[in-house]
Image 1: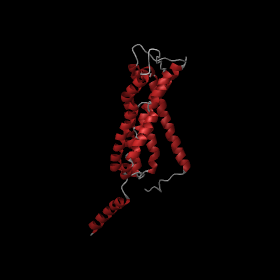
Image 2: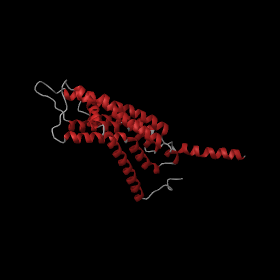
Image 3: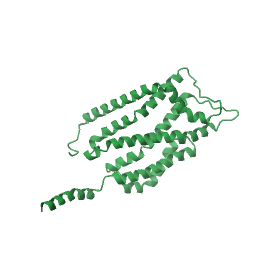
Image 4: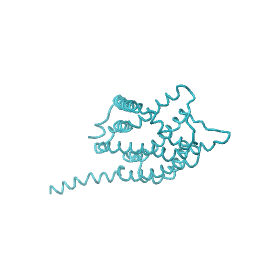
Length: 261
């Protein structure tokens, strides 16, 4: 079956997108309901790096009457998104799948597993490695006359942005390998533009992380490693040059012709 046979009208693409989004929303909703029963525990786990960096006896506060309630709701939603991540990635890649060849569609399940792995790995890296350094930096501005009073709402917003940023950033190998599979980039292109990628990593890290050099480096360095991993992935799974594809297509015909003789 060729790509021409698989072509879908624009309205069919929109209907397919709607169907995938609805399924992803259902998964997030189910994850939210499950996580809501553990909302207090989940927030305590999320706030542990900050509480550990604070002084003895210091606590998080809430400055508005409904703030704690809505913060717990948002924590349950954030955890629900993490719980539904495999379904979300599956729906995304299945939406892309109609544009792939049949042999490429067989890789969907491994791609979903790896996408979930890299996303959760990025979030865990931010939680266990970056959070302690970042919070120590911010709390370091405290003095005898200045006392930090972080609120639940502000902390959740800050932590959620960082966790999502690291999770998405760690999808770099999957994105680049997929682009290489589609023929949009090549190994030579990735190697040639390594220095520009490095510059973009540091710029992105400066935007996404707290404004201290340590946390910026702690995000940029993993991205450099993931970029090199992307080159390996592009070398293994990237689309071969046209002449190599033609050679592979001709070899079976030659072997068949030799057998007939």
